[in-house]
Length: 330
Image 1 (tube, helix red, strand yellow):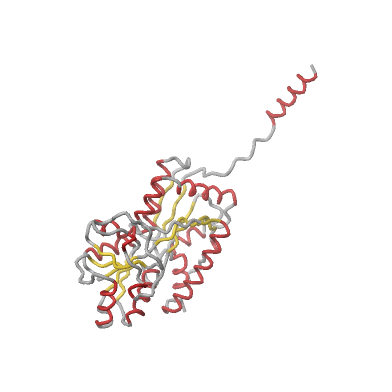
Image 2 (tube, rainbow, N blue to C red):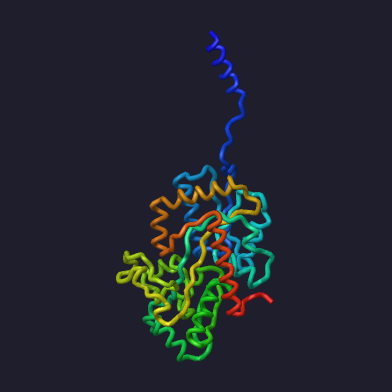
């Protein structure tokens, strides 16, 4: 009898006990800010993530991609910075995370945001039109050296950003000036080269892959210390692994770009943990692995202190590069 009364009392206590704390998750749609125009690498990755998160029901709320490219991406970064305490807004980065505040003195620094995770590192490839007389990077470099200053045109995303930094490195290798023509996003840049309005680009692989596959562009070299690991043929004759390094052609330009996620200021550990877990689940999907190979990404993943330390080191590298190029705001 006593045991029955004790059990009843315990049951009643359980009914009135506080519910167990639930891990945080979004309670409304998540705005996914892209600080660049449509069609570029960051935009393509954000929209791909949006699609497969929805397809596999990785979260209950939808993701809404919003492009805010004004001021070389400052529009997007300042909006996220100004949305402190809003865990329903995240941003994907490119190198304008560093270059825009350094070049314009806009009141923003990556430390104003909450680091979440590095999704991957993006490569850069030197491209020419498939009908260009330059068959190799050595041919291209020799032609610039033999020409007059500003004879050759390089299209790139934005001014005083990663594409123009790389252009300056090529100028130093050639000892000649190149006319740099800025556009709003990597998609526009690729179209300019396909249309022969410029002589070259340094687009990310994902931005030019479709045009390369269709025979409209030629890949000359990759801005990495080592050849890319992907050996499946993309064109009839070449895989990403077949593209030589630019350094082997005499162009001392090694550059990898962050594709990472940040949240608004004041995000809690539970909120950050939700997104880190989300992206870990994403990385296990076959679609993500296919996307990584298609875009020839370096698949490094980081979160927590490791990620923040990497970003701080990358910032210091950009300060040095932009100082050398004369791009720092005065």
